[in-house]
Image (cartoon, rainbow, N blue to C red; front, side, top):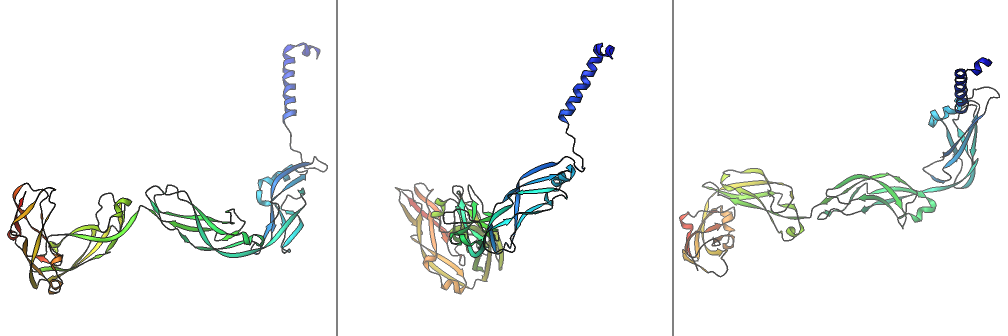
Length: 404
């Protein structure tokens, strides 16, 4: 032995073995075994949820929400099994035999491992039981933020509009409203979502309550500014010989136009698609796209149904219509040289439509906006209702005007 201890290599090996053994003693804590008189193990669990057994439809309960639980035992594996199945145990108070009032009741438990000693702190808790009072309330929408500049927001639509609210008896007089909080900040499109409800007092502070249903559907229209105006058709051409238009019906007759406020302000009617009357020799129904003009973003609807009724032309008429000069540049004068101040207009249509016709329904104009000085040959533009056909020849619609 003395020889070994005098050997440096042997001493080094022994020192290493002793160091390893000391490290194991300090760092390794073997689990105690299950045996009579064995080592006791204790663990504490804070913030254990304290549950209550009572009729939730009839009462509200005020009490501590958590307790501390200490578990003692000699079986390490029995204790650790408590944490491997979290929902096996329950700590509660049984209020099923109590009515409204304030009581001191014992805290009970179940579901802990067999053989474990369970200590709950506190052992009793104070509980206040109140009757639940129910009242029907209209859902109010509380808006947060603003829609994007240039957009407008319509009235909120809430489904269902009323809900049943249950509150503690002591808070019934404090209940002011039931709210759905809706954030519309920067919205550019309709808000259509489901929102949770909350009951609040007159100061807007939340009140403990049970709301049925707990959520509602809220729709808030968010659109560009809009205006509803009559839809007007453009017409071109004229029906085939012997045919006249007896009626044109648009469905719908009015549309909603969306766009900047400044454009909508002066908008009294919206010009729709152009209808070529020369294509109609019989009754017809069609759908046409409504065009977009200027900065208008859309129309609702974006198509129009057009129902055209035709008739055989059975009557003729004639009228002398005053000729109007339009778009005369400032500082100039215009004088009609030929055919004079009126034009004799030949008209064709059904007897019924011709009977209703007046001179105010016919317009004869000469556009001089782009004409130079001196005598100018021009065309007289005669415009009549779509139910009336102008039968004048091209030659009879010519005129001479003097521009000075």
